[in-house]
Every structure is written in C-alpha cells, then in structure tokens.
Image (cartoon, rainbow, N blue to C red; front, top):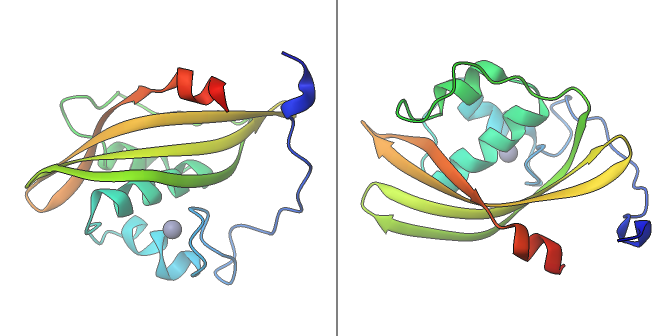
Length: 147
Ligand SMILES: [Zn+2]
C-alpha cells in the first residue's frame, strides 16, 4: 500500500462549543444531541447510544463509555488514546435482532500521527432495564481493506 488513500485535509471546526454540530455527525448541536445522553438521559435506541459513545470517545468521556458498556464485557478502564484524532462517524446499518437487542454497523474515521484510518465494526447492543448497553463488536477488516 502507498499513501494514496490519504484523505485531503479538511478544516476542523471547533468541537466543544454548543453551536458546533455534534461530534457524532448530526447537524444539531451537541447539547441537543449526544450531550443529552451524556447528561444521564437513557438513549432511546441502540443507534443513539452508538452515536453518543462515539461522541464520548471524541470528548474523552471515560465514565460515560464505562457506564454504557454492558457489565458482562466491560473493561476495568478505558483510556482513550491521546494520539487519536477522530474525524467522523457513519452508521451503515441498524438492525433490531430482538425486542432488547440490536446490531449497529458503523465506520469511524480517525487519524493517528497524520495517517487516516478507518474502523469498521459491527457492534452488538442489549437493553437492560430500559437502557441500552454496548456488548461487543466485530471488526470488519476485510470490508475496510476493500475500500
Ligand atoms: Zn450526537
């Protein structure tokens, strides 16, 4: 592989002001989007939870990442990599697999040391007591390489 897949540089708007679009990519501001869930409101769908978890990675909200991780698979701590610069999220597929379970397939783009990367994952979510939780994910490396 050569460096030809490098994306052109894009201007990055400031991310943490409430006027900016939400880090998850929704046009509405953070305060009306993922900020609501970060403040404690239960995400209504697995997709909303997925978006709010992505935003939590962008904003380095470790407690939120742990709180939305299912107890059966939750790590003892999450340390977001300081070198990772998150560039965007796109939800590819949302599938209810039961009354209280769902799959979300997404691609997250990020940069490490100036190199653009893609994380393509199919994540499993379950709902316990009215709250959605992230269970685990499978990387779709083949699909990521095809692009
Ligand atoms: Zn959002």
